[in-house]
Image (tube, rainbow, N blue to C red; front, top):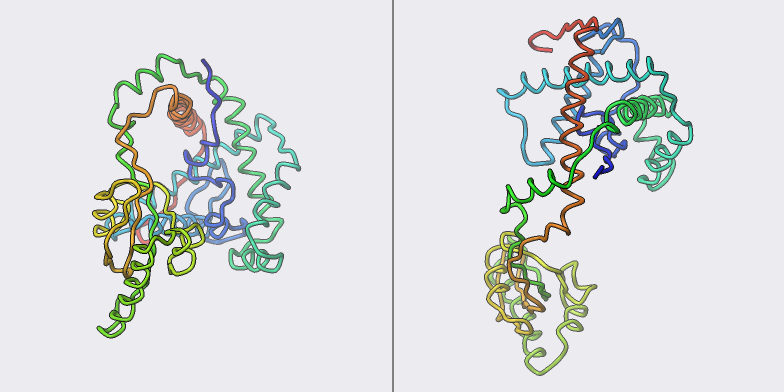
Length: 331
């Protein structure tokens, strides 16, 4: 079996992805600069390029709740520099192989990016903040597409993944394919500010008690949620969908998992306020069937194979290339 590869390349070399908002904000048009951190066959990687890429890595890790420590920065900078060198080597190779980028592919990505902004002015403002002209953006997209097409043509299409390999992965890591017990529940929330005093909390408590009385008198939970709940799920009748343990705050989780389908909890207090919770359905712990996960595992194995092949290919390019590194401590 041969599995189609996905858009894996961007993860491999920390390149342009599909020009997401985060990466777009960190993109830049290559401009003349006295500072340089490397040269690849005479093509300069500027200090500005390098600083922006390091900034992007910082922001990405920060968004994941993993801010860089001082001790991590030197190693991260080395990795960023090597990624930039790898990217340049692959781009040069794509040009040597006469890879041509269809203008329509560039237009499609620019159009997709523009749709992420409410209007043209906001898009242009983002360009200015990124120190990037639209022509520079298009050039950067063109470079990324050229590299991707090169790898698709000369590396990725040669990789295959067999059914036996996929099955072996599935059987070797059974714990990865377990789905924990889940509950589907709805709730009605009356918010209480964390800084609320006792009188304010008492007012909120009175509101939830009145709603509880309505439920006890037989009124519909979903209708009451739409009318009174102060949470975002109110528009769906309070429906929160399915969730597993660890996804909700502890008091809410304890109450929800303690209910049978159709049951409604007593008043539950969390840091968000007061809740009434109705269990709709429960799903026991299950294991994902092989046939249901087979295609995803195949794509994962393909990505891993291509990553290794790209790494080996870049290493061979480095052996033949003239790569100069000028990065010094403190840069």
